[in-house]
Image 1 (cartoon, one colour):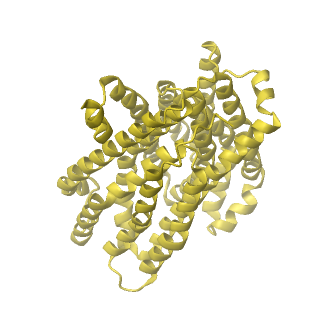
Image 2 (tube, helix red, strand yellow):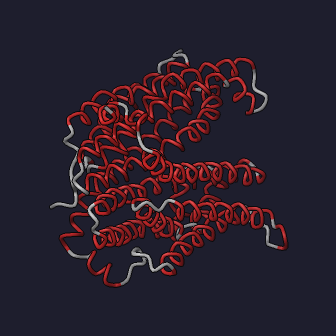
Length: 461
């Protein structure tokens, strides 16, 4: 009877050990995402004291860094899936090879962007922002933070590898320290406190560079002090450069990286298009976006946990257990999404009040927009966990890429664009259009999972 119940309602009947595994894997990632969101808000608030041009310059530089972070995350995701599967197969040497390959390929891809930022920023930044003051400050920020790209790529790979073998505490600790150091150095170097020079926006750039370097250094020191398998030596890198292994890693990771790029560019397109919907729309989205970011933090953690647990089961050729884990996360995600949505719906008036004095019309529109968000957000988070967590864990990367690309660029963005530029369309419909993409993907993704063709052991080839 208990086996039948677990098959139908695994989220209700899972053991304490199973729940502990989920919490251990998901919660640290969620907390780290939350810290990063709060850091972004803190940077804007601190730089904001320097004026609107400084905010615009840091915002522009942050968007460029974010687009490249999306690219880095693609390599990290590819690394995470392979390490999880090899970990399930107890092939520790292969785990080392994957991390080494992730570092080699990721750093190689980032080097041209480092050159572009460090040496050529003054020439191309004015092409994307005509304001001379803003472009000059943004170029200066990018030149100082150019090496951040290399440091961050290495950090992403180490984080992905460690999480995939069940160590989520160290990435959280290093991430937390980096955030604390960044905020402290912002305070010291932007405004010149405690005898430090007041460097303004360049101080914020140096704070970012130093904190990210110390984060990477912290990983390296910890790995070698513990003599961890990911404390890679020459042999690991030599084995990783085997032509067959290199081609396999690139072949597996390329669709994942492309998927992240497609998503990142599409997400940026939604935000750019929103700017044409009017000042009121921008004001409402300015409140909704940080709420969405905080809301999604936990579900990114669940997605990460599902990738690792499903991937390990597939790597160990335990397809039945992988299916049970999928059902568990599906039910847990839906239950949590509905629960948080209900809580937000009931407290939305209080949430709107946090953002200060707003005119009555904007408050009414915000309340209605949040209500629509609460009604539909479960579709987005279920798709996220199913695509990024479950399908990707089995290496179904080409389907994920095709689904996201086709639906986003042929359905989602065209409909959203039409809603924005079609005069007189109510904002609530414009906001509803941001969900059309996920509504369209929902059934094909569920059918794809039901066919179970994604349940592949990637360690056998």
